[in-house]
Image 1: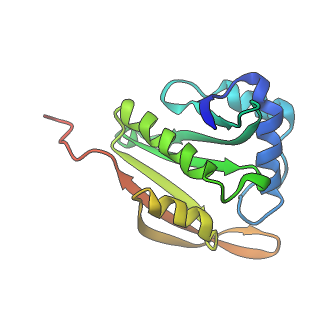
Image 2: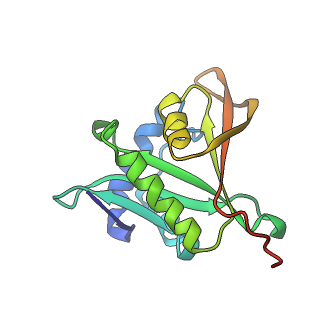
Image 3: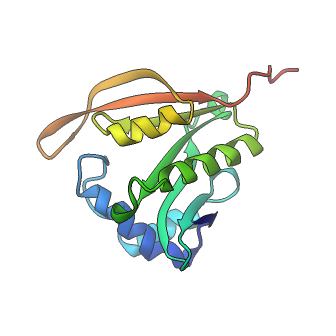
Length: 168
């Protein structure tokens, strides 16, 4: 297994993985992404906010991840939010950790100070993945989403990458 930057040719595989999650309460989208929407999403990912894929020995995409701006106001510019998705048949095989470790390395290389994970409450595998990578629970947003006729919480975890004063 290896990671690389996602390419436009990965849009079908990424959409398939993402859309499988849309059919569950683990994702806040209510409808699947079209290939055009997925291609646009990929086109918008570059530099520090690039998307990556995990590929197996045959070159098949088995998971993807990305870093996104945490908020749009300038004072938040040193914080990013991570997203990690793994193909159903590859869960539990270390793909998520492999992707998350690479995303954290990318965030560090780009000088980010903080990484936030916002995970649907009850998604224990994702929460455990982030905790194993050093993230700490910082709070729960109660009933902030609604899907499948249920209220959904968001568990927020955070990892501080650097402790240096940015003004030094």
